[in-house]
Image (cartoon, rainbow, N blue to C red):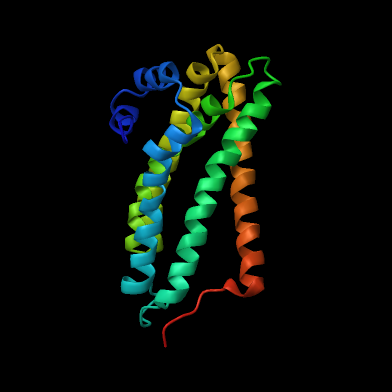
Length: 200
């Protein structure tokens, strides 16, 4: 069922992680029923926010992107989110060997996919691109994402909580490295001519 784990991850995360574990969905099913839809939320919101609302610095007039520029950036943003989820899942799969609990790639990608749920949902705020609003709501969403990670790893990887804590910390570090790599890729793309174009 499409998006059937979203509510459960907020209402009763441990039980929901167990259900996700027991279902053992394929990579395709995980993406089609969860990632492809949720990753579109920040992309669509960001497109509307940057073209229709814009952002302001002080009392200046709102700055907006042209539709063409925002569309190009949105497509790349969407692809980056899809690749990031897969990359983190693949790295979890690789790291699981270190902990002697190697799991299947689909199981590891499911862990990465469902852990990112709060970040995908809070991406809806990009429709109103004001820094303090996004930080105010984004930081609790980030904190809950970390909570889901630490709750989900022992269940999905079938390891004790103590071992799960260390594994989760390693996954968190990998996630931060992936974020930095994405930012570097953005700078490179801007340098190659895909920089944002603003309305006059």
